[in-house]
Length: 195
Image 1 (tube, helix red, strand yellow):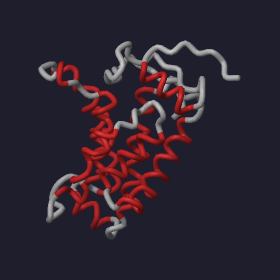
Image 2 (cartoon, rainbow, N blue to C red; image 1 turned 180 degrees about the vertical axis):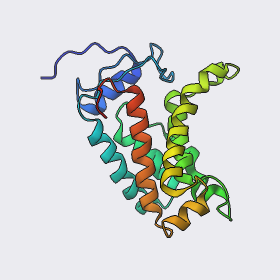
Image 3 (spheres, rainbow, N blue to C red; image 1 turned 60 degrees about the horizontal axis):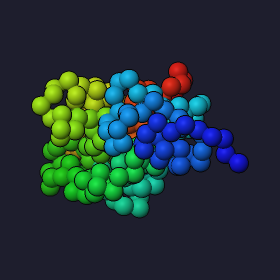
Image 4 (cartoon, helix red, strand yellow; image 1 turned 90 degrees about the vertical axis):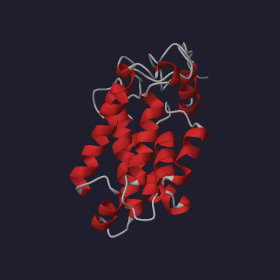
């Protein structure tokens, strides 16, 4: 029998269901469907490193299956971090964003774009708060951390530059983008000090 856990929000409830019980208690937002804020913390126990590794493995696997770097990254982070809603509309958003969404590859890497989509969904500003610049700062800070990791590894977030560095081995890029995204989300929202 699973221990009784007081659920503070729909998002927490979904996280508990995905985790099989009490593993994902949080101080998530009071309103279901609302983005997390810099005050929200999720209890993932000591599973942070495992979740990051899972995001990486799922990213590579998803890319091999779907051939879409944006959707592969979105799906990997949604599945690796149980408190990230597995929203089909968010996944759908990445449909046309693979390969920089251009014939030339002269735009952001799809894996990087997928990372931004997930981060925005987790903690971005809502349409109701669109005029509040403050509401987008957290998501912007997190996606810039992922951008920094791309720049350190590949010298750029531009698709053609990244692909040249990895000799078109995009599954590797998606794996890294998925793990970096999971890492920055966990560092921001996990209660545990170790991620």
